[in-house]
Length: 244
Image (cartoon, rainbow, N blue to C red; front, side, top):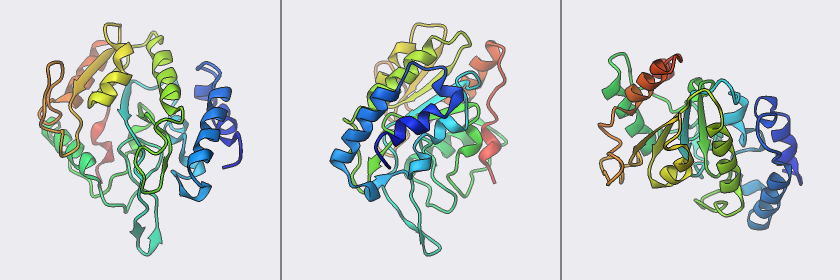
């Protein structure tokens, strides 16, 4: 990742770069901060995957936003080849990589929501990404060091994206899973958009509830999201499309 490579790459994603405030200075600062923390060979995901969520979608065509926290930070072997878990889409891992516990609970809730959902044998959520922005609050991480880049400026980038989406006229459903996501999506509350707040789908959080959110498991959040989309005249999400 050469200096300012982040801003150069993001500025080429016309469906987003043209719809958001200028991000060049912020991304250049983020990249400098990342290099001050991590050697290039330890940065995940790979260069061409950092903005993967934006490459699949455009500012105008997404109808749901799912906010994750940190990219996955391990590089397991798949058929003798080292593969990064991180692929630039929140909660998603490449084909062949073991499905993480949080995603297993996401699949479990989907199976409880949809009669036609067969739990896949893989964790690749790419087929969702045209209608759903699968956005992590930090877009990079250091190998084996979760949250290593949490204070590099990525949060400001993510907040800019969310705040600009809130200005969009066409309603969006924000699936806010966990307190971190609740904080990031707070600007969408009490607007013409919708925020469905639950606990995080991780094994530690999936069954917990709070004063202003319910437990992830049993929330029916996927059905509720589709109901809200239909009410606003939009196409529901084909959640079952990831199934094998």
